[in-house]
Amino acid sequence: MEKHIAGKNVYITGGSSGIGLSAAKQLAALGANILIFARTKERLEAAAAEIRKSCLSETQRVSSLQVDVGDNDSVNRVMARAVQEFGPPDLLINCAGRAYPHYFEQISYEQFDQTMKTNLYGIWNTTAALVPEMKKKGGCIVNVSSIAGFIGIFGYTAYCASKFGVIGFSEALRSELRSHGIKVAVLCPPDTDTPGFAAENKTKPEETKEASKGAKLMSPDEVARQLIIGLKKDRFLIIPGLDGKITWRIKRFFPALVDAVLNRQIEKVQKRLQGAHTEVRS
Image 1 (cartoon, rainbow, N blue to C red):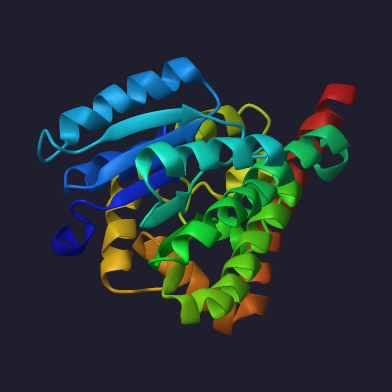
Image 2: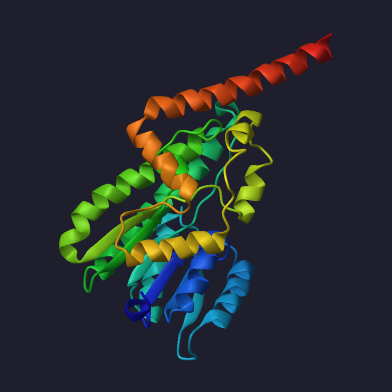
């Protein structure tokens, strides 16, 4: 990876925090030129300053551009500018994402729409804007999905819809772009200790908290490290952490077992909540 990434251009959406920022710093430490994208200018500037500290040499370029990946017109304008000023990407990491966990009936259409625009449309918009340039010399695209991209999780109906879509999109895209020398990978991290995860806990149903209670919370740095290892090994599906890998295998080969375990956890919480409501009424 060190040999292949040094001097290459890396574009990272959602690069101002969390997994995106960690990946940017680690790839900068391998000699890559880094261009990050996010919605907030101040966070972008602070993140770019952090990334510069990780650079291997003073000749590396680090820059940032403000964009909302869910806005197709804006993405097209900003990516055209990025290619002109920075050069086309050798590696594109679509990492921008958001989640609003809640009971299905408590998730408004506006929340659902925003989740889909960021998590799924955002990947489509960015990839569509850059693939024509990447076809000229090849490269690699990484789309960030989630464990919730292959297993439905209570309270995450909107998020799962978007992340399942990312995996399907990535599989189809990989098939189409192979002949153009462009590889496609999909990253499926488990619960990760990011600012977004902290915000999710504010609306997360009790059933969801119970289902994830025993899961190990990974750090963004470790997820990014596993991403780079996965790219080095030329993997399509990159699942960081032992728990995530075990979950994927069980879901693939024993789906009924996964459903049974999750249903048991959910029923346990619902009985407890029902008992608490009964005591309050009495």
